[in-house]
Every structure is written in C-alpha cells, then in structure tokens.
Length: 364
Ligand SMILES: Nc1nc2c(ncn2[C@@H]2O[C@H](COP(=O)(O)OP(=O)(O)O)[C@@H](O)[C@H]2O)c(=O)[nH]1
Ligand SMILES: [Mg+2]
Image 1 (cartoon, rainbow, N blue to C red):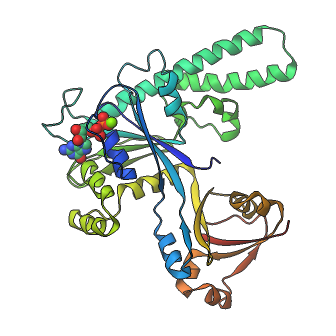
Image 2: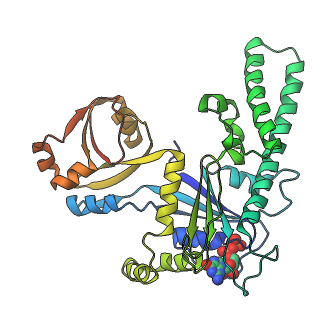
Image 3: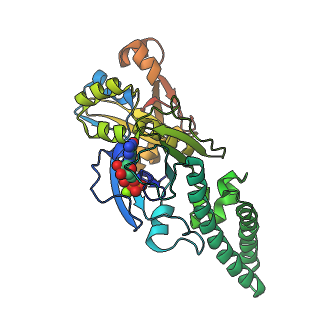
C-alpha cells in the first residue's frame, strides 16, 4: 500500500473543483478559477477521526499522529478531450490517484455562468464520464494492437501465455467500454486485473460523485442524482459554506457548523466514503509517547499491521496485544480492560478489526 492515499478532484470547468479542494484542505482559492488550462494544486491533510481525539484525551501522549491523505485539485478536463485519449501530464496526474472525486455543480446562481448554459448535474456527470471512458478506450485499443503484433511473432511459450492472459482481460474491458460500461463495473477480480493494473485505467478507479448543492442542504431541498455503479458513491455538499468552514480555526468551526446545521464536515464524510470504497480501515497504537492512527486494508493480519508500523516489527513478530477501541473506551482505560479480560494475545494471522488498539511484541 502506498504511504499516503491519493485522491484527485476532477470535474468540468467551473464545476466547483477548487471549492471542494478548499473544503477538504482549508486552502483558500485564488481569484483566477474555472479555467480550462491544466492546473494542479496539492495538499496533504490529516484524516479526521474522533476516536483519535478520545484516545489522545485518555493517554495524554507527547504526540498525536493521524492518518494522512493527499488531495489534488486537477483542472483542465473538459468536453471533447477523451476522443484522442487524454495524454501527458494531465492524464498522468489523474491516473496517479487511488480514487477520484468527481465534482459536479447542482446549484443555481446567476452570478456563476455555466459552460453548458444550464444546471444539469446528471448530464454533466455523464459528459465527463464519457471523456474518461474514451480515454481508457484509446489506451486499451493501443495496447491490444501491440499485443496482437507481438503474438504474431515467434515468442517463448511463457511470454505467449502472459500476453494471451492480458489480451483476454483487455478484450473484456474493451467490449465493456464500447458499451459505455466503466471498467470498475465489470465483475473482474484482483487476480484477473493484475496484468492490466499498470495501465491505471481511469474507469477502474473508485469514484465519489460529489454534488455541490450550493447553499441548499443536500438531500432536503436538493435531490442528488443517482449513480448506480460499482465502487462508487454520491455525496452532497454545500460547497461554498464548507469551504468557508474549513478555513476557520477549530472553535469558530464548531459554532459555524452548528449555525448552518452541518453535522459532519464534507471532508470527513468524503474520506469515510473513500475508505469504504477502497476497503480500508484503521487501527491505533497508544502510549505516553504517541497516539497514532494507521491505515490498512480490511482483512490485513496482525503481521501485516506490524509491517505497516515498521519492517522490524514484522520481521521479529512474536505476538500482538489487542484491545478493541469500544472495550477500551467503555472500560475507561488499559488496566480496566486487562482486568475485564478484554486485553487479548493474538498471533500473526489474527485479522485486525477496525479500531483495534495494537501493541506488537517483537524481537530482532
Ligand atoms: N453560489 C455558489 N457559488 C459557488 C459555490 N461553490 C462554488 N461556487 C462558484 O462557482 C465557480 C466555480 O467554482 P470553482 O471551485 O472555481 O470551480 P472549478 O473551475 O471547478 O475549480 C466560482 O465562481 C465559485 O465561487 C456555492 O456553493 N455556491
Ligand atoms: Mg479550479
């Protein structure tokens, strides 16, 4: 797993990409927005997790370290671009992400012109999706052509076999794309996808459709468009308000959120959605020195979790001492958890649960 998960904000020009980026990172947008040029700005932010705050209050460590993720605000995608295939730095920048945040405008404001002349989120989502689909189609076709060339020549049987496996999955993906089915919607497992992982197909990436409903709370006044695809979700946000909230210091933020009836920031909701789509969750390490959140794939073992902390911990792994977050908080502390028998010894194959507090015993 990459050190830091990368999430790319994409959308048509003037779709609120930079506004969403501001809501996610606290960045203040500069005046020149909404262009069609390729632009990129990046930020790394802490993953909000109220459990970390509770643990920090309990252990009063010298240092609190949260999980971190990287966001990129990627400007420059627009109608008509996918035809010849996206290319260069723009394609690379989009392709590099673990998941995409596809933002779409759903608010009316006479002061904000819409490139298509009207506000129609479903149309705009389909428009950008189509460009991504076409871009993938170009990549897949080029690669298929190359494989066919190679297979015409005499090559070693192992190589032939590998090329044929790749060809088979590419042909499945190609047929899907031609029917406007994103690659993520095909029922292909990890092992099947392995030969084509390196192509970083855009329609294979998990996607969160972020609908900016303006000042109207999403789900009440503003209906969210449907998006029935695999590894996808729809999240509504009040873009401008959330961007302003993100710029406040924590005390003012709580007041402002109460005033506007924002229960949870969109950054928190979107990140939780990304974690779910990517099959990720968290475990914690605690102590006087540091309380820390770690991100691992759901299903990862104690040994793999240990390796995330440090390779030495995996190499010399003896056992993991585990308390669940809920038990620890319910009992009020580590000693109480021990006395209540909630402090367990687990071996290397133990599958770590979300919220587990781990202490790895090791020997190197
Ligand atoms: N009324 C209103 N305008 C917004 C909101 N969010 C963004 N905008 C405006 O929409 C325009 C495009 O937003 P921007 O984030 O720059 O879009 P980008 O081109 O996709 O980066 C800007 O003029 C924003 O001020 C919102 O929630 N309400
Ligand atoms: Mg922008």
